[in-house]
Image 1 (cartoon, one colour):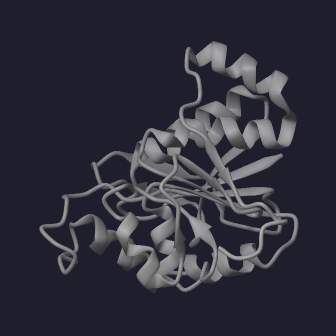
Image 2 (image 1 turned 90 degrees about the horizontal axis):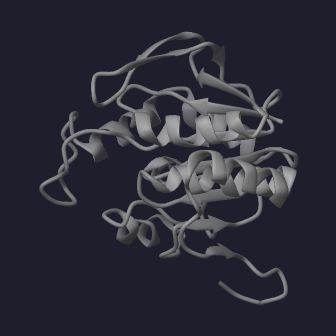
Amino acid sequence: MLTQFVLFDGFDPLDVIGPYEVLHAGGTTVELACAEGPRDVVSGLGLSLRAVARLDPGRADVIVVPGAAGRLPAGDDDVAPDSIPGILLATLSTELPAVLKNALGLPDVTVATVCGGSLILAMAGLIRDRHATTNHLGLHLLPGLGVHAVDARVVDDGDLVTAAGVTSGVDLGLYLLERRLGAARTIEVEKLFAHERRGTVWRRDPHVIGP
């Protein structure tokens, strides 16, 4: 199992590092990647991480998209470059949306997001009529982008798994680990991290008709 963690200019480091450490501790292969290829990527907090590979859905089993770190917007119309909405919006002019579109079209790839990562997918028009969550401050934006917003810590919509606020990335990592490798391995990592998953995972029931 290879999980690629997406880095883009202004990303939130904890969105990446939390689930990265969980999946690494679970014995899976993890990799920092960028749509433009290997490079140093500066987070919204000024911390740089090195993307060691190009984001490649043809190689990855799971792709995790983080949110952004920046100043909180004064309102929904605040899309200044250094605001979280501005940073997320800027990703739409990069190669990232095209790569994520490709990933969502592959049957064996799971796309996961932490915090505002789901808003990147939503703004790019990639998850219309899907179920997703995001940071509680941006949850109200999802319906306007054609997404069924679910107020839960982790939302499983098949090949799309989204997590809410920043620290929920740890819970996302544990859930992905359980989904792929089972409960026994996940319990070991929970004990190692002295952390138990919070909240109920919302899953779409394929036997229920409608949203």
